[in-house]
Image 1 (tube, rainbow, N blue to C red):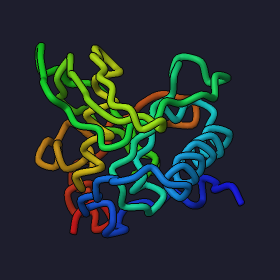
Image 2: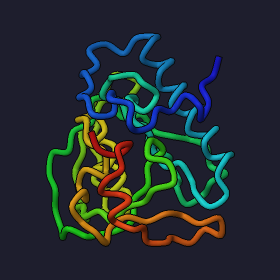
Image 3: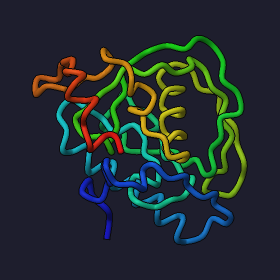
Image 4: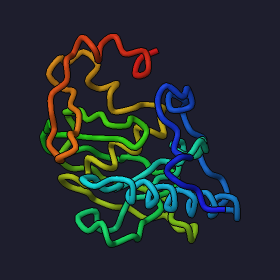
Amino acid sequence: MALTKDDIITLPNPHLREKSSRVGLITTEIKAICDDMVSATLSWDVSRDHEVGVALAAVQIDKLYRIVIVRNDYEDKENQTFTVFINPEITKTEGKLIADYEGCLSVPDLYGKVKRYSKVRVKAIGLDGKPFRVTAEGFLARIFQHEIDHTNGIVFVDHIKDQADAFFHLDEDGKLRQLDYEEIRNNTILWE
C-alpha cells in the first residue's frame, strides 16, 4: 500500500534527530522505501495550494536510511519524477553563504531563513547501484544541504534556533509572515 502525507513524521518525533544508517545493498526493501518516499511526497503535494514537495529523506517516513529523493523539475508541480540518491555526501561546498527561505514536510507550516552554501558537490549511489556525482548551484544546492542534514539528524530549524528574525509562516494566500520569536523560542515541539 502506497504511503501518503500522513505517513510523513513531524517534529517532535525523536527519529528526526537521529543519524541514518548507510545503505549496504540495494535490496527490494530499499527500492520499496524509495517508492514510498515518492508517493508520500506526491500525496503531500496534492494537499498544498502554494507549495511543492521538492525532496524527502527516508527518515521523514520513519526509515533511518541514508536515502534522499529530489524532484527532477521542482519548478513544475505537474512533473512527478524524482532522482534517488543513496548514501549522499557533500564532498565540497563552494560560493557564498546565502540566507534564503526553507520549509520542511516534517516541520509543518513553518519556514525559516537559513544560510546555505550557493554551490555543492555531491556523491551518491543510484538505484542501479552505480556511483555518480552531481554539482548543484542555487536552490538545488540548498535542497541537497537540507536533505543531507536530515540524514545526519539535523532539521533546518536547528541552524536558526537563536535568530529572532528567521522564522515565518505561510498564510492561506501564499505569503510569508514573520513569526513572534518568543513563541518559537519556547516551542516544545521544535526544541527538546
